[in-house]
Image 1 (cartoon, rainbow, N blue to C red):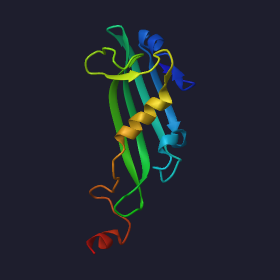
Image 2: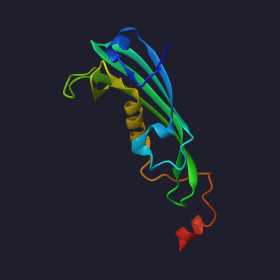
Image 3: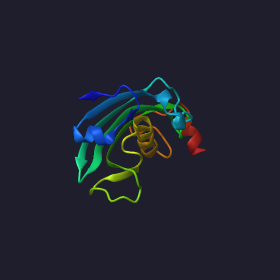
Image 4: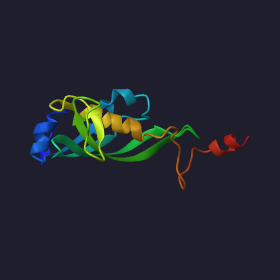
Length: 148
């Protein structure tokens, strides 16, 4: 297992060694999402297992987080659990053929930005309109406002 000290990694080299990268990020490290959080003290974990498939570096990426969002029903704070799983192929050309069941990530496979990859997964996993789920309470008075 390899603990990534930085954010950039060489997917070809690590896939050839069947490496595992585990990394934890602070919510504040994702600038494209800064306006979505109600707090920035949360953490995001990334788990990336790499291998070479048909000559292409491929990774199984798991992103987990408890995201502090604003409920769009009551406008109160809430926590949204997120777990994203994807199988990605790191290719230099977006039109390159990739192994079945993978999503092409067009980048230099020898210089992959893990933080940007995780941020993309968070963007894709966020709800369009966050709201408290079944069994969770909205802020007092919110349901009365919706009925008027």
